[in-house]
Image (cartoon, rainbow, N blue to C red; front, side, top):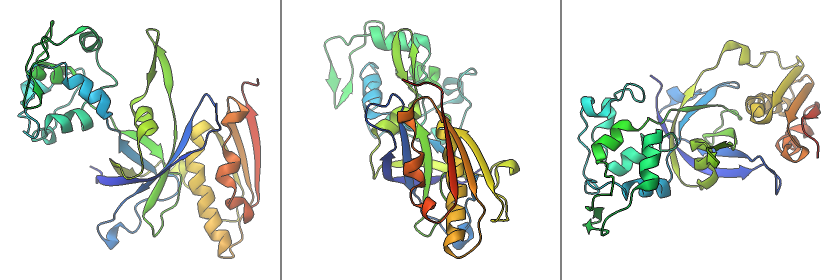
Length: 296
């Protein structure tokens, strides 16, 4: 299995113009290599797997509707017969020993709750608002105990993003993320990662790992060869690592071939190429071609 790293959000750059219906963010993540053996963790075209976290506001809303919540700081004792729900979860021994806060933040995907759980959260009301040492003791009208609730929740799945930068001495890695929203039962639903990115601030932590890509996504070894890059939206992410690699070569006097970029998006206000290519364009021969599927 891949080695897990703890990344710190160093910067969150909004690439979208004011009023744009789609939002794009460039996340700059800081990591700490443990030894010189990790000098080459990733190459242009490789991926970063991240595990987004649930927002505290969403987690707290859930906790308030459970009547037998364990005391804060006390580890959960999870048994396989309780924790496993075949259609949702695969048992993992690392789940044991987590507190309820840690479990609801980092393990359960509160953005993909089954319909029965969503109905429970929307219709349950606490009786008398009973509390004891910071936990709810009153049973909701249609009460659901903590163990049953946890057993029905899906597990957070890792999100795989193409790396949008080259390895550097500052130990940072960039990923390009598009915000996703969709309609469900008349409500606007935001994806778990999108919701996390929308609210995350520099200094916060997130878990992740590096992953190699298919050979077809590797940059040609000969820097003098021309590049033809075709993408849409955040699909431009891996090409940023290609361009940065060529930029480094050009700054050392290496001859580099021209780069032709064909980028598609819905509206002109979603176009972020000029901002991302501003520095590289000073030393590389880059030609861009845009295609907008919807014109106001």
